[in-house]
Length: 362
Image (cartoon, rainbow, N blue to C red):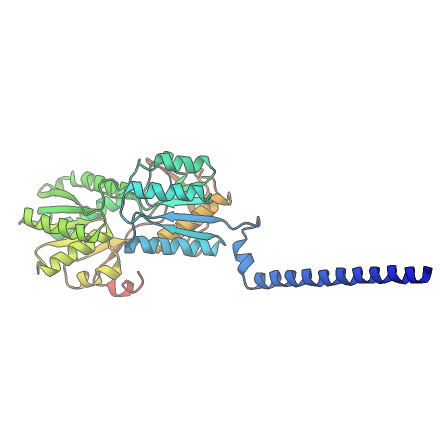
């Protein structure tokens, strides 16, 4: 009897041991699966060192804007290189209300950083302050918000240099005489307004005494409205000699209108444009030359700056420096009249000599 009882207990123990061994083998299979995903980059790419992938958002002015699409493409590339997740959002129309709604959603998602190309200099302050109070790093890029609304601004080029350069360019085209107009984006766009302000400062010089700025029109960075505003300028000012459009949407729209109306040589266009969109108009003489920086680089630098802030490589103190991937650095945190900023570089001139080199790039 005792022997039977002993054998029964031994059988139960052996059965338990087998079950335990089987469970161990199943667990080991799960671990191997995790190691396999690491080798494929799935886990390691998402891990920023604390076991949690950082999420960085970029909010541009509006959808359907080729310039903005390039900025966000550069931003996404940088965030991918740093191992984070890029979230790209834009309202359908270039309004502050649309951006506020998106930023509220991003706050609710508890993203790590929000970068914004603003539709309004002051209008985003309440929602961006809310984001910062919840520990989210806030940056502006391309089109700034006021200094109290963000930690740093990524400035594509020195605003004074842009404004003065555009006046010098149109003056040379007009031989310092005649009427010209400005076709801007929205009336609230901080970058446009600052450039136009510096254009006005440059125009105060005596050498421009015979030039007349007849109007600043606003196409709201919408193609159809920019076309309508250009047509209205041509109708209102029959002696107009040039249009300066410090917006990629505006310069392409104005150039198309003048080309369609066969006004090459009569009304000249310059400003800030994408080489891919302006190659035709530089080649046909409507725009003798124009300027821009690489919007891919604007977004790319923004992405690296956002990551540097989240990882506490920088805090936004003047004098701090950081590297930004493939861009030639280091980049320094500086102070301007508008607050803390990081400067990308100087604008570049595109003309018939070099436009073919750049039109297939961006």
